[in-house]
Amino acid sequence: KSRMIVAPLTKEDANELYLIIGNVEGIAGRGVAELPSGKRTEIAAQLRKLNERLLQISEGRGKQGDIFDLDRDFHRLIVHSGAGPRLLTLHGAIEPQAERYWRLYASSIIKDLHLSVEEHEFIIKGIEKGDVDRVELGLQQNWLKGAGRLGHVIDIFGERGSW
Image 1: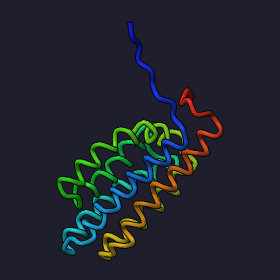
Image 2: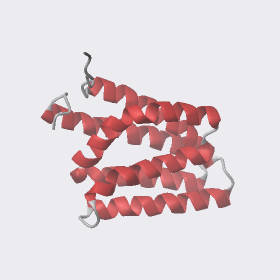
Image 3: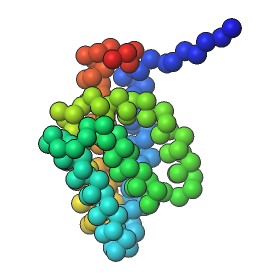
């Protein structure tokens, strides 16, 4: 008889996963920033709507349970708009691994949600300007800072993810 064992949620694993997904999304973000202005404006408007809903939640308006879906949709819109088939495959392979942490993170940092909203706004402005370096850096930093915020939660509650 065998039984399933779930790997613990560790800071080291989260840091590695967030670094990888941040770089993959950064490459996709460069692709979005290179799109024609009209397409970039359209994507930026969609991203801003998602980000505004996250802002509402951070201000106590809106359902906290929507954080994960809104954040995931924000990042996926960038990836699906700027990545080619190989990058989409890479993102599809790493996203479910990061999702274990992402789901925990999304519900555990409500007091810091405004920070992620600000980071998203930095990315959106880069897309509007067509600034490939800003978009890439913004996505990488959003994930790295997210790993830091998650690490703080793990420090408080432990690495087993039992909270």
